[in-house]
Image (tube, rainbow, N blue to C red):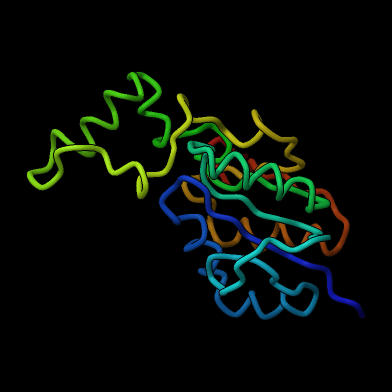
Length: 177
């Protein structure tokens, strides 16, 4: 059997979704019978590869780098999955949307520190004016909600892909049956 290519991506979020993904523990070994992980913050690949079957995306789109990255990833992925509430709704990452970007940068990098007198534009990512959920900037095929989604939701979702069966994510949310 030829394994399909699998990737995970972390945009602007807390990494909680990746931690929950890892909480699948030994079930990850079962998944690896069907997929090769070709890109992820949990492995050390630098460039997003071509022809990825499924990519899980954690986090919102908040910087120019995030926007460029997700557009490239969308082109190279057969299926793109928004995982977690930041990727789906913007969640906590969008709290800054209520303020002017200049005020946010000033508060975060200048007013609340004693060591900086000006914004270090080389090391601070160029932020977009607003934070966006992934589906507002690229087409998303599936959504796996939660903050974070539970490990069993990841497992059952990936298993449904392997078995080509439907998956109902609401059973893993507080709004489920």
